Structure formats: C-alpha cells, structure tokens
Image (spheres, rainbow, N blue to C red):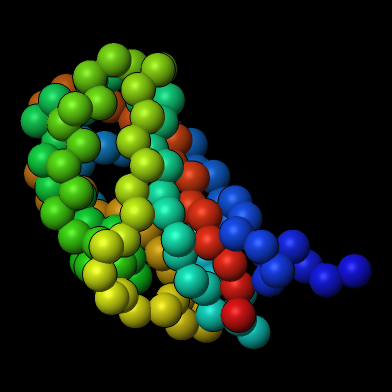
Length: 125
C-alpha cells in the first residue's frame, strides 16, 4: 500500500512545547532524505499562556525559516489551551528540499513565557 503522506494531505508532524517567546529557530519537520515536501498549512494550538505580543513569526526552511510564510501575527491567541490558528500560504513559496528542516522562527515572540503545539500538514513528492 502506498504511503498516505504521498497520496493525501496528511499530518506530517506535530511538535509540542514549542517556545513561542524566545527569538530563535524551532524545528518542526525534517523532510525525508529521498523526498521533497509541499507544506499546505500549519496549525498552532494548545498554548500554555497568552501569545499577546507575539507579532512576528516566520515559517519555512533555512536558518531564518523564511521560505514559506513570513511575518505571521499570532498575538490573537490569548486564551491558553483553546485558541487555534490555521496558517495557509497565499502566494508562491519554495518546495521543501530533500533533507531540509521546516520550522518556525520567533522574531517578536509573546510577552509572557509560552509554549504551543504546532502541527505541519502537507504531502511528500
């Protein structure tokens, strides 16, 4: 039977306890060595605190995670444990190369210490 991640949009990875305050790169999904990945959407949920102040998060590959969608404002996620944001791309972006790592880069993170669960959806080619 064919791998579902190659035939449907699937949950590629779910990462818990992602630091949403500290300015840094957080790895979310490592593309397999023999595949490329097309990311269709990212879901951010189950925050440990308010993301108020978190106005600039980039998603993608590379050191700055800036190849998929930049400057995502997540500051409306203010109710921990229940708020959800689904991020999709609206313009052209780069396919995630073989063995690359898709992640989130915190540029302007939440005011308070906060973690979140981030789900990466897409398919492999």
